[in-house]
Amino acid sequence: MSGNPSRLSDTSTSGNAAEELAARHLQRQGLTLLARNYRCRFGEIDLIMRDATTLVFVEVRMRRGANFGGAAASITAAKQAKLIKTAQHYLAQSGRDSSCRFDAVLLSSAQTGASIEWIKDAFSAD
Image 1: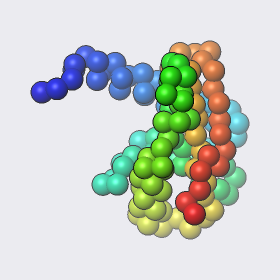
Image 2 (image 1 turned 90 degrees about the vertical axis):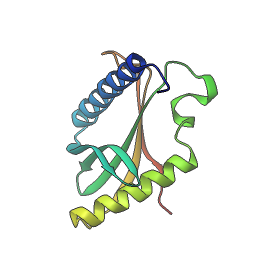
Image 3 (image 1 turned 135 degrees about the vertical axis):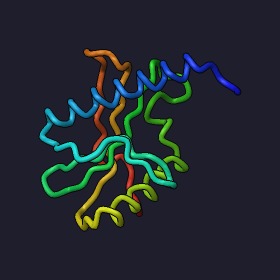
Image 4 (image 1 turned 60 degrees about the vertical axis):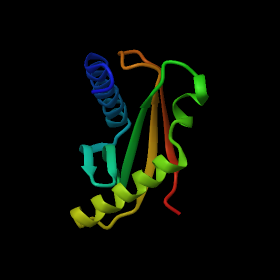
């Protein structure tokens, strides 16, 4: 078995805390939470929210530093493709037919008071 189990647990815990901070931040901005951690064979979407009539697929990223480009740079073209396929699966399964966008929420930490950057329409499915 590779990896340190306690390290994986710490990563999972901080990831859940980061997603909770992001969800609360977006809810304060008027978005409605529809689902968390939507998984299918293509991948996972951290948060699915509604902004008025628009369905919003949210990728939450936390980076403690700007090494390797920071949190935004970690949403690679390959990651975007997985998110798009997962979103298409969600739409097919839910029967929803509405306008959509992909947002990113970038956090400096999973602690209250962390810097939060919300990038609306971070990338498109075109």
